[in-house]
Amino acid sequence: YVHLLAYNLIRTVMAQTAHRYGISPRTLSFKGALQHLNAFKDTILRTDEESLPSLYEQILEAISCHRVGDRPGRREPRAVKRRRKPYPLLTKPREEARNELCGGGISA
Image 1 (cartoon, helix red, strand yellow):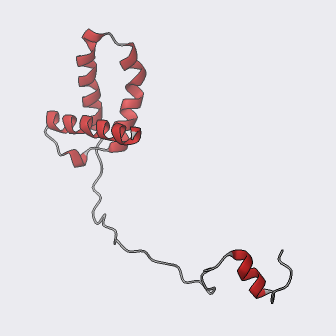
Image 2 (spheres, rainbow, N blue to C red):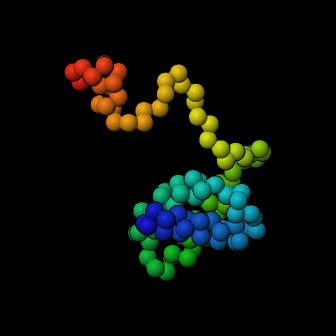
Image 3 (cartoon, rainbow, N blue to C red):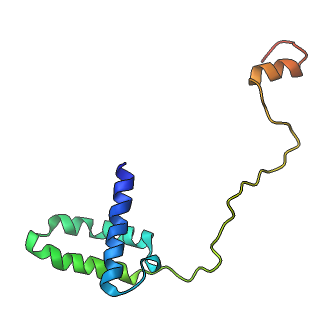
């Protein structure tokens, strides 16, 4: 659940950035936002309480500069393509299949 919480917090910061700068949230890079937040991590921890709002503005400005490029045709089919193999699927325990293959001989 911690990963989900962190993801949602980063997306919230991205939404605030988009709102503040009048851009679409989809144009902001998640990876870029994550990298900027990691870069500012130590500064955030060392900054006194009075300076946090201005630091937050700097973070939002940095995130707003990191945009996603134009990526047309980014749709993938929701289908699984299995690779055809010359061997049948193993549908029983491996040792049992090995014994059948060897004619009931010694299993290795």
